[in-house]
Length: 127
Image (cartoon, rainbow, N blue to C red):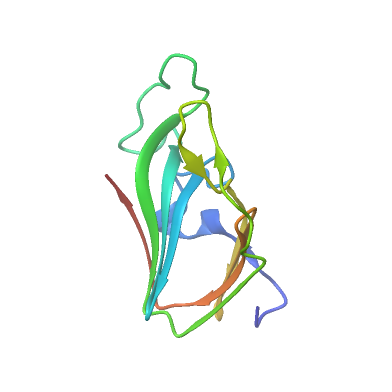
């Protein structure tokens, strides 16, 4: 965004123990001052809530959200793709394939589009 050196999301303390590239985006909501991603989050073994993967699963999945608060700027492009439907009938929009940030904001990309977000707070919450 503003800096020549973008950093990976794992350098953000709240995101160190999740794998966004393997997590599924279930919904995205942009409202004045906030952006919320509802996710099937993949937890790493270092996460306090980690449990061994369910039978037939490669990862430990938990429902949760990634929320940007205090949003002062949002650019969302390429957002017209329909969701995929899995064998259980659940819809998802793919993964967050890329999430980089610098002091001026964050850049996220996936099958759901591309977002540039300037916010003051990033939170991850499990359900």
